[in-house]
Every structure is written in structure tokens, then in C-alpha cells.
Image 1 (cartoon, rainbow, N blue to C red):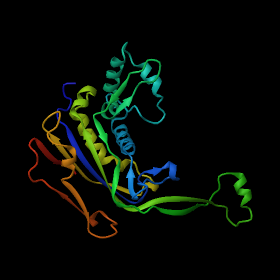
Image 2: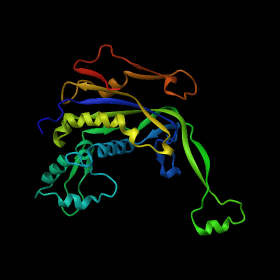
Image 3: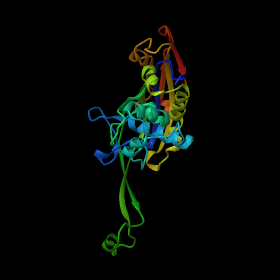
Image 4: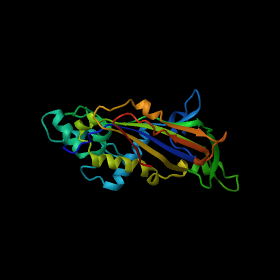
Length: 278
């Protein structure tokens, strides 16, 4: 595609959660994910990618070239086998053209009878990590109904039958995610300037269309991008990320205002443009 992005980007995304579980761990009875050693909260990259995919699905209604490959009820092998082309690279090119998430995040397409190789996506996210240790609050809840007749009979002696359950939340946490966008990989998948704008929009609006009682209140707080004026880049991403520092004003932060975010704009490396998207 002629309009594929020509610039490398590195970005920082800050978001917070209040009285919710931003990303449950199925191996830990769905407790909020946390670093086992220091108890800082974690949100996986695939969790945020899922929200991006869902937003694109809602906005573009699964129409090409903004269809979504990794979604509920999709059976992947038959989709790959149905794509025309005698060579894997031909089928891969067609899949990148039709599916937004393939040309954005990449995909393993080496399944089915034909297969289409593997696509390395130009957009990559890190795990999001909370600025401070999180407290995993565990709440007992009840439901004024039972699931089976057996449960009802077991509770006949009670005045009202009910079912007990649990809900885990984080009282408050501010999370930081780093992202990378490669112009070199974008050239291979066809990731365009329009795709980039949709990515920013999806990140900022993903929480608005992903509400659930268990997730509490989740809000985007900052989205800051460093745009390089070249394909390969003009500075190391780590040095750019170090320009964004976060300091808490109280011992137990419970709101966004309890943190101070500082952005060092002085003496940016040559060829770097700082963009405050949010």
C-alpha cells in the first residue's frame, strides 16, 4: 500500500481502575493479576488488544478492510483455506488486506490444509504495570436464587434459598503500558496512516464499550507518542520513555489526582516529535 506509515512510533499509555478487576488471572481464581514478587498489578497485552479489536468491530461492523480475524466464534483454519492464492505469501497478503488486527498485531496463519505463514505485526504492546503495589480485595456476594433443583432441596430448611459467590477488585491503581509501532513491519502488512488513527481512537475509547460490573471504573488518562522522522528511528525507546515520570503525592493513592505526571520536553533528540494525544 502506498499510504503505509513511514515513521516509527513509541508511546506510553496510562489508565486507571477504581473498584474493579482490570484483568483477572484464571490460574488464581480470577484475582486481579499481580507480580508474584512485588505485588504490582499487571494487565496483559492481549487484554488491551482484545479491547482494541472489540472497538474496531463495533465501529467498522466487520467490513473489509476492517474485519477482525481473532474474535469469538471464528474458526480460523477454514477462513485461511478459503482465501484464494497458490502461494502462502499470496494468501497472507489478502488476509492482511481484509483484516485490521492481522495487519496491526500480526497472527499465526500456519494452520489448516493450506496455511499462510506467520505475520509479524507492526504494533506491539507490553504488559501494563501498576505504579504501586495493589491490594486484591476479595468480596463475598450472594444471589437470591439457586442454580439447580438439588441445591434448592439442600436449602429447604432455610427461609430463603441463595447462592454464595465472590468478587475480587482493586480499590485503585494507575497502570502504565508501553507500545511500539514499526514502520518496517508496517510496510510488509500494509498498516496505513488511517489504521494508525484508528488505533489511537481505539485505545482511547476501548474502555467505554467494555463495561462490566466486575471491571469497575476504568479510564484512559494519558496517551503520549514519540514520532520518529525515519523508518528505523532516531532514538532508543527506553530513553524516550524515561522522559515520562510519575510520582505519588500521598502514601495510598485512591484517585488520578493523587499522582503527578511529569513530561520532560527539553532537548528532545533530533528527529523526534512529541505528540500528546491525551
